[in-house]
Image (cartoon, rainbow, N blue to C red; front, side, top):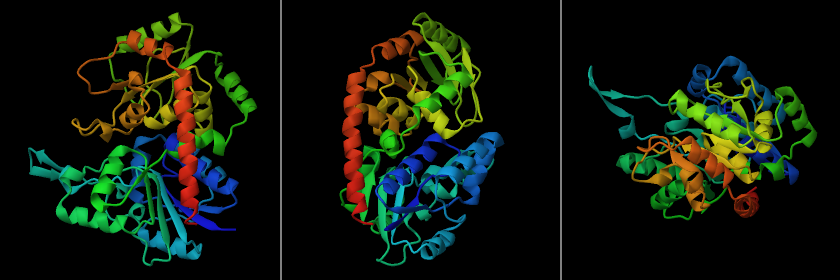
Length: 394
């Protein structure tokens, strides 16, 4: 049985990150490969989630990893990763999906300060260089490196200094195959290396294929939370608009016969008008099933949008990922929705014009499920083609 290592954001306190890792592991297991997930969790990244996510929810993510993912011993450093690869006798490492190429350049870390004129912001190890996501553990050509739908989410290549670019080029040269999740990353990789970077889907697009859920198990959730057969999810990281805006949205949804569900992010629920509150602690698979079986999703972040999209659930997304105003594809959400012709379901959080609750609900009601299904099917085919290519290196 061929053995392969996976290096990704497998254990952070994020529903989508956990599920993309499980999707990849399941695909490989279903095809007879022996998979181990390299358990890299640097101290500073762990501390970030300790500060931002309540203990009871972080424990849910830990329990998920322990139950579903075949992890190695804990790795805190690149040296630990190198040693684990040797111990496990791994000859191929898949890196991704998610923002594994998300280096934050030095010029992006400098800020004006009243006290010191210029201040320097620190970043966690996953946004610094070098780190294992860039293959810094590779010391010989026998070890194969493959990027799996990688993203350079916060990599502002225009502000990289010459030596930073040189380092990134050197690291990308170590990869035998490069697939990326968005056009932003594709352009960066191809401009740096002159190599083709294949534009491929996030593994959550293939979750139903790779890890189908038990329909009966959702009935447990329906009973537990008293969910109606027609419910709309509201799920926000923070209050984007005045409280009156959420009350109007609640009323508009009620007028259309929706039960309104306030679904928690890993950080918890915000206080908005709703009929049902599904707060933390919440298991990632339960989170997936609640979105999968909903009648609408209105909220933030990419992975819940993907869950809704490939299950033909009408959605409306408020995007906070744009960090280059003149380059909308620097947002991973915008990139997906423009390529799929679904920008009618989109609003930029920092836009000067505020979308009305009426417009949001109208967009939900006019959602073209057939169009979404056709794009999801096309993207599933692209995912399977990518994985077929990747397994040639194992």
